[in-house]
Each structure stands twice: as structure tokens, then as C-alpha cells.
Length: 346
Ligand code: 13P
Ligand code: SF4
Image 1 (tube, helix red, strand yellow):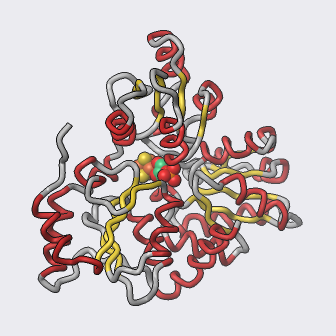
Image 2 (image 1 turned 180 degrees about the horizontal axis):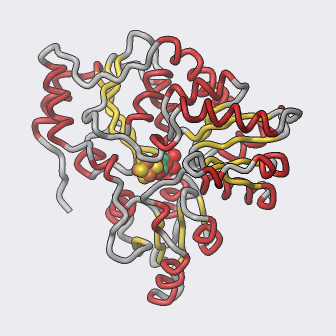
């Protein structure tokens, strides 16, 4: 169908020229993605941010992604998030102070063990800094297994934050599914020191409220309704959903799966609905379906970035005013940068 580009955004981008680059996550609305210089998964976006020369990096995504871009870009580059309301609820489930307190309990439970903390990219800079300070690192959904391997070369246990589903799915991928315990900081009964001693992988009890809603019944239903349909899901989905699917991977793996599908194949996608809609539009030769029937899986954090906000921050830049700058505090920046560098190296 017709383009959904906005003339105001085009005009401001023309005016800014090489001064600004727009990065867009795969879950961004169509009206944003169509203005992006690069669209990708969290890992690719952090690499693109690191490589960008532009003075302004306009980030179509959520706060933790913009923070990571600020950490990874040079000091004279400025990262702008079109809406300050775009915060991933999962990232908010592991606050650095709370993790600090849990860390004391967990390390006390297994005093002889070398525990390496790994945080998912979906976390704030202070938690990334904490992980670096304890010898750990950051990972995304595309390299979690490699981060775990890196950690097990250096220690005997992993504390994985904040997404328990990605933690469990990664443990399974490494053949360590029997080694997993969950640490629920909100429930005294969910913090068992004995489990810490017995398990090699301790998963913080966080989750994505979009992906957690997919169920194994959704997979069963789509296979029943569409003969021959295959299913690709994100590893933030529950273990049983991943188990029932044909392919699991980051948002860019999901894109590649559809890009390389033969014409006429049917694929159901278990992830945020905007990506499913982009893939339907980009690959009309493939039958692309949302895994849960009527498109209920919408990330309200990603949706905060709308074309009006994008137009506004760009027009303000044209007028010489920087709005919605994402700037990580200097002390956190250095350590969080170490955690991100370790990820880019594994
Ligand atoms: P990707 O790293 O796969 O792009 O995922 C980011 C995300 O927020 C998934 O919910
Ligand atoms: Fe966070 Fe889930 Fe939204 Fe990804 S889809 S940004 S994990 S709430």
C-alpha cells in the first residue's frame, strides 16, 4: 500500500542532512520505520549506533536502547528519544538497588561459587554497570548463548537478569535446562538459597508482558487452522511456546526466516504485532500470520514513539534546540560501556 511517510519529518530530515541518523527497532510503527536509515534488532542497532558518524542519533525504540546508544557513541554525539514515555516494563523489573540487595543474598548463599551476572540488553545503564563491576556482561536475544558460554569459562554460576524466559530458553539451548532456578525478589518464598547452591543458572523473575501472553495453545490453534503453517517465535516467549515452535530467535532472525521462506509458505509469528505487520507488507509472497489470531500483542512502550513526536524533535533540532536528550551519568557510562563492549566482543 501507499507510503506512510510524513512530509514534516521528511522536510526536517532534509534540512538536517548528515547531521542526523534515524535508527528504528523492528517493533516501531510503520510511520517511524519508513523514515529510519536503519531498521533492526537490539544488537544490530547497538552496532549501528557505535558506527554512526552523525552528530544526532534519533532513536526509534525504548529508553534502554537509547541509553545503550548513548554509552556506545562518542561524547560529541547526542542521542534523542522522540518520547520520554517509551520505557520497557521488563527493564523496570530489575532495578539496580534491588539487584544489589539480591546479589548480597545470592552470593552469601553460595560463598564458594564464582557467580557471573549477565543482564539482558533490556535493562537500565546502572544495572549494566553493576554487572560489569562484578565481572559480568550484557547480552541480547541474538547472543545470549554466547554470553552464557563466556560466563561459564570464567565462573561456575550465572545470575541472569531480568528475563526468566530468555534465561530458561538459553539454558535449554545449552543443554542446561535441569540447572535452572528462579529468584523472585518480590516473594520471600521465591528466594531459596538452597536452589542457588544446587543450580548453575539463576534467573531473575522478570518477563515481557507482550511475549508472556503467547501460549502453547496459540501454537496448536494456528497449526489446526492453517495446515502446514510453521511457527517462529521470540525467545522472550515461555519455554513451552518455544518448545512448540519451529524456529526461535531475535527479531532479526524472525525477519530472516520470512525473507528466506519460499513463496506460498505460511508462517505464524510470535512477537510484537508491528513486526508481524511489517513482514506481511514486505513479503506478500509469504503468508504471514500473527500467532495469536487478532493482533493483541502490542508493546505500549514501543508504541509511544509516534510520528508527531518524531517530527517535533527533528524540527526542534532544525531550530537549534535539543529535546529529549538521553544522557547516561558519566560514572555509570564507563562501567556500562565495559559490559556492552564485552558483549560486542563475544
Ligand atoms: P531483539 O533484540 O530481538 O530485537 O528484541 C528486543 C525486544 O525488546 C524484544 O521484546
Ligand atoms: Fe520490553 Fe517486551 Fe516491549 Fe520488548 S516487547 S520493549 S521486552 S515490553
